Length: 254
Image 1: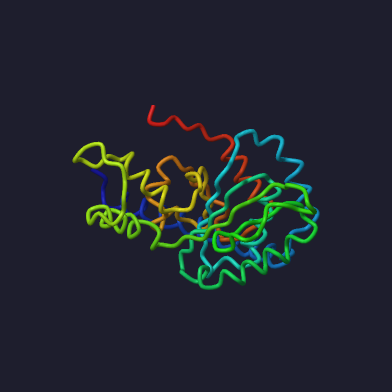
Image 2 (image 1 turned 120 degrees about the vertical axis):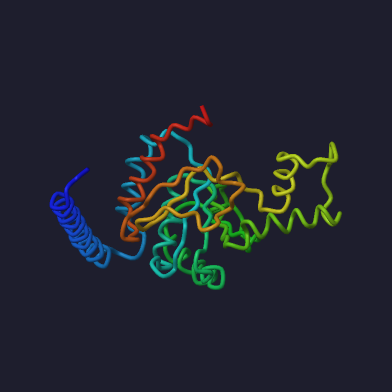
């Protein structure tokens, strides 16, 4: 049992260490915020060059990327640049999970910002709510990235709604027995959700890794990687996140 003076000394040391760590984090955040303020708010040729230079080293194919989006910290320019970076990197599906609920209401603003950033970048962008856009550039088929926006209503509430409709025979499905299996539920959800694969990677910013109710059925094998501590978005931390995902070894419970 430690004596009271020893406990007091240890308590002081712990508080001192915590204060030092907080001070270091504050200095780092100010530096990053200053750097992000000075950074361009559009995709540059340098961004594309960085992606093309590093892409051959990313050997793990990424089909579906989800970005936890907080409009209190992320601007429409930040989100638009990540769409274009994903297009250049060959990612086929990019979904935004709207934490605040404002992105869905302002999807048109994001659409216009993406179009502003896409000038001169080959490829096509299709929107979940704009299916009329084609997948061709200058008459030739080009890489296409599909954009979807989800929010908390698309998570547990949507699953509960599907189960309620099944119980009331309002949603037709193939039943092999009186008991409902996980595979049958998965088949129903595939019919209700857009035809997109389960996400392999979720990017988030800030100090805490929270799902915020993100598609609980689809993320059972998804990797969560921190993009930045201070909510900043840059080409460097985007490429860094892809490299970290490339090193992930999914053992599937082994």
